[in-house]
Length: 118
Image (cartoon, rainbow, N blue to C red; front, top):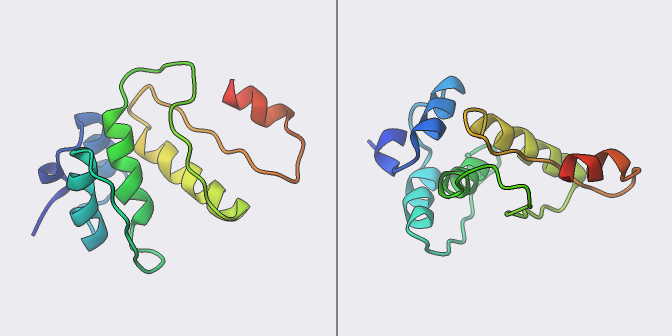
């Protein structure tokens, strides 16, 4: 059985995964993470609750270095609720890195969102 330590993630992400009490990657994570870390494109499909966000977010965070001021990744999702869930997950994974995440969605004033993006 594969562990997160065997997937090639950075030490700061492994620390976050452990803090979140994840021990064994789900099938989609075990299959997608190594491929994404190697630079391959991946299309994955899995049921709700199987760890799809970690499957794409952990490799993205692992490959980013340093807290550049400009946005470097854009994740598009179909609903505000999912956008907030993805932001929360990414913030948890990035907790021991200098990387930051923010969510932007319609239907509300953009002032605080733009400040967060800056």
